[in-house]
Image: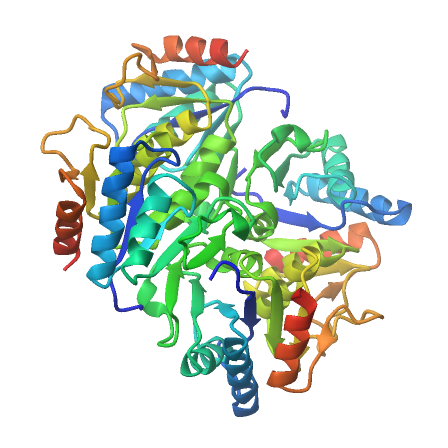
Length: 155
Length: 155
Length: 155
Length: 155
């Protein structure tokens, strides 16, 4: 799978129903396109993206903050308990060619910032507005559009 | 110095004259208050803060992204070449009780986000507006005010 | 795969023919037993273990020291460019339930030491002798035996 | 202090009296020579080395595994709570020009191995025998000799 695109899906560990629906659609779309889904391995948006990907036959990589692999959600194909705490956010971004952010709080904001710092494309669904013009985040209204934009950006 | 407050000063590696003036005032004020200045160890705002602190008799800690200690600016008391790349931003935040952000680009934004995620006070001078109400960043107009606000927040 | 055993295979990036033969047998045996092969993602023993695993239908995780995914050997299923340098050795050990060391130089020795520090079983084929009695490393003469010993230790 | 030698002193968190005596002598000798003492920040050999250095007017850097600065021993000048767990051992080695190992268990062995991997001089007092000829560790019988050997190796 080292030739496939790796796309990170980042977002809150607790999310509402519409956010979970979009995250799941993102995961499904990525899997259908043959991309690897990279995430922080926990719940909420991360879990929904993994579930969408796995149900579509895809593969998911969960980079966990702690040292316990069993903290991974049930839809993670391969779990890496980094033991780095929030420093693992940098590894999520490094492992990916582009980042799709679905909503998100401060942890998500750190991942968006690190991706932009590294010059990697960031696509957002209902996520942070950095108040910059032009907007450094490519906006999508729903999951399938986000997938298309992210894959276009890395090809 | 393990009993002293540790305050991170974060901001761009290249800064304009007014930003450098405020960063230097922040460093000076922190040193005069007996605080340790933590930073990323490089130039711009980081260097100005270290210079201000050292000229006031203070001590500065530089957590570098690379593995070469000589990349540290001349005003770093102790340099730690972490070799973690931008993941060292998480260590800058961890090492600090509060964060003062002077201006800043995406790297600075990642540090602000990680500090807020960790529940640490963030004071800003002309830095990112996260578009949240109430503003999670305590605003200061100049260096001495930022120092006072940061120290008040950690006491 | 979060329920499967994760077994790290560690060893030199350049290895001789007998070492590569045993590493490949280790990878094959782990895959046949349904275990995930974790490694540093590069050449030599790492590559041979991955090849053995993949040819047997298994899955391999490569935790790379650099930030470039393309440095992974061709048999890595999922590559994580950690950007941590040799600090990634700690992540290889963390990701695994047990470690199989095939020969090895100082990098391998650091992984053996970190595994023993964490209380994880270490099985060795022609690797370091730590001069301790009883030997903290369980010795195997060839790959299949090492696999059996490692899997027995984690069950 | 970025021009001074940085020398790591590594060893067990619990040590016997003769080990502590040598570690303290190492710290004192390093401080008298103007070197910065780098260590893991905890007790035993680390604490003794820091105490020796501080009592001689030196400066000590403690790179802690956890996120709590207060875990540092009382003789640490600057404490960095890395939050990296045992991966911080790699940072201790990176921060240093040479390593002095006093006795030590598996954590110490990982630091010796990482230092040798990085091509950094390692001086040992009663520490691991790696069974190699020539011995990659320069042997010292007591603290002052270890300091002299380490400083000679980095000049």
